[in-house]
Amino acid sequence: MSHSQPGREWWRSAVVYQVYPRSFQDSDGDGIGDIPGIVSRLDYLHDLGVDVIWLSPVYRSPHDDNGYDISDYEDIDPTFGTLADIDELIAQLHARGMKLVMDLVVNHTSDEHAWFVDSRSGRDAEHADWYMWRDPRPGAVGGRPGAEPNNWGSFFSGSAWEWEPARGQYYLHLFSRKQPDLNWENPVVRRAVYDMMNRWLDRGVDGFRMDVINFISKDLALPDGEVLPTGFGDGMPFFRSGPRLQEFLAEMKAEVFDGREQDYLTVGEMPDATPELAARLTDSRTGQLSMIFQFEHVGLDQIGGKWNVGELDLRDLKRSFARWQEALAEHGWNSLYWNNHDQPRIVSRWGNDREHWYASATALATVLHLQRGTPYVYQGEELGMTNVPFDDIGALRDIESINHYATAVDLLGHEPEDVLAALRAMGRDNARTPMQWTAEPGAGFTSATPWIGVNPNHERVNAAAQVGDPGSVWAHYRRLIALRHEDPVVVQGDFRMLLPDDPAVFAYTREAEGTRLLVVANLSDDTVECDLAGDRLVLTNLPEHAGVGGRLAPWEARIYRSTVA
Ligand code: TEU
Image (cartoon, rainbow, N blue to C red; front, side, top):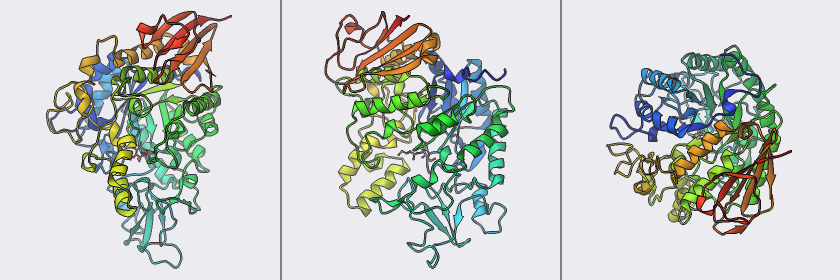
């Protein structure tokens, strides 16, 4: 296999399915998902039509952040299986014509990684300069409040700095204190990462999702950030997309991917990235990545922070999607997502999971999947899985939520029920409850007590009830995926947003080589007037309304095909 012509790479017509291994399928009865469990479900994924699995981390980890804290990049955590199991998964995927993208978490390691254990032991250790170590502020006493090198807060509450007496220094951790940031300015660190990446590609992996990869280049002055309500500073402007980001990614591309025969899918997770940066990095002629995950659309209902949830204005969402489609239209490439293991379930967040559960889940899928870019389906999204009615902080498992609750209630004096309501709306555990395979007590996920409770609605929302039912959410996702594989206009067609100021209708066209696809959806609870139509109705989520002209039922989504001069 050789490199494709730029712009024709395989991942441009692919659909990616994200598996969060902890919650997908338990095969050994410990209440935690594992790799053999994933292998047992590959026919389900192949039948859905997805081409690629993006597998969240399965490497050795203390699981402080559910595997995003890696203590050995080249061994599999016993919770999930063995290296032989991952080889079997790769072989089974390839036998089905599917591919595997691994999660690459190299902005930070676990504090239990051998590199960090050595680094923290002293300033003259072999790995002394592999992490972001800094002295206390001048004149301050290390380990005492205010001595931290700057005022940055961690994403998981508290300071982003931890004192290490053995070195008389602080180390930076943008996430938990058990996730120390690597020092990418050190070429020896970069070499070690590239060597590890090459060994995974040699093992048959088909690409990487790169965790917060735009954090690897930071403003080395590490200046204080604007003080937030938490009392800590906002370091984001100084630790994301720093001056050497494109240089590091170009070096990674040269050292890992360029010398190889096949094309690989590389997707960089980039909080706070701009369309301009994405256009540079994903340029098919001169870029370094296939695509990025940007966060603009999934931040639109967060008023000054994740936990202050506001109403979404559809016009803002359309403006955001149009901006990114336009910026990457010429030579770039978008990823397309609603969900992942960090986001709440879209049908609950921006759909209507009560009166219009099926219609809103399928309408939201339609307006996403027909855009230009690579769509990502998060486990259970294809079933319309919803947020979870957590009624007690004890039901949650995510370090981000648990730390936020403690800070908000114990330090800031917020009402526990108010904080819990925000966690129910936006907490990451909404995405992490077990995959709902059946209506049985363990949802077909496990025969044991699961590591996190199953959503009670699994008795209604589950794969067994939907697979094979042409009127299910699953069937609609399957049709959308098939359309991408069958119609080149879905992959290559030009994107044009329509009705930008309409508060309920999401409509756009895709056009190429004399064919136009029109996507028109009513993303509201009310019937709306809309006379947009085309020559032939290709797909609808509400067939019973298909013949009605001039208006759209609540959450009705239609796709038309027309021939154009
Ligand atoms: O998430 C990075 C990131 O931006 C998160 O902080 C995200 O914004 C947040 O979870 C939403 O509030 C990646 C992984 O996807 C996440 O699971 C990890 O916890 C994090 O990096 C650290 O590895």
